[in-house]
Length: 273
Image (cartoon, rainbow, N blue to C red; front, side, top):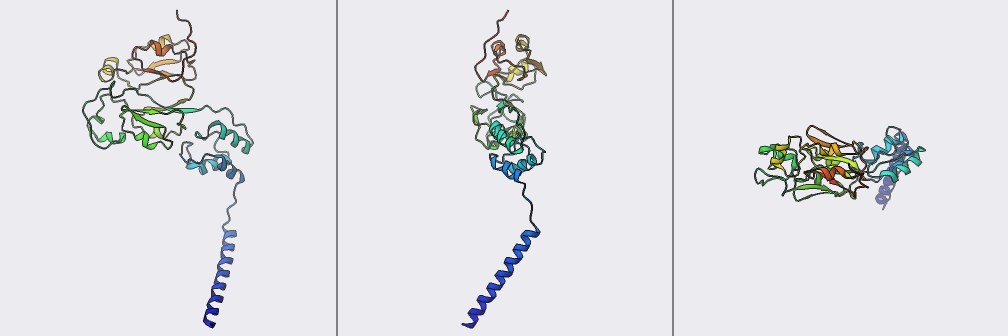
């Protein structure tokens, strides 16, 4: 009986000593918590996608609290989250333009030619070790093996008929797909964008037509007919300045290869001479 009592006393004393040591350690190693940082972190979406350029939401929250990052830095949260963070930080969040990813290729299995039939690991980045850089004849086109699909944390991109397609509603503009695409085919555009060029082939017209029926041939018709001067053709490929584009759809109408994709209904088309 005495041995049991002694054991209980010893355990109790040890417990008290450990408790005191933990209390002292907690005070010695106490790290002051920034209340603003905690408040910002509480309103961030918590996806930890890294689209903001920081290591997760906690990293962004710390940067915002220190004034090292703007309150609208989170692409996933968008304007609503930016407004909440602005209130916490006591600053105006400003205007946030909603962005979305877009794949600049429509050369699907029917329109784009292939040099051979490929069977093997389905990963776009692995094609660098495959003869010809992959089976697709177009050196600039989407390979359709889904590296971007695997990288997207929001299930917003899928391969359809050999070409990656982005679901604009599901996309949070985190940029993961952009990093994953070895061809550099994916870019961020305004969610409200009306017209986009769905090609990045920089070869000359005949070479383009030899590999794809819907490639840009740099005919300049879109550039010549754009009433807002929003289109330029450089390096044999058309580019649309989304800040200048008025969404009239004239470029899409004039394009003989139908390379310009209409994402939203065109606005009223200006009268043509």
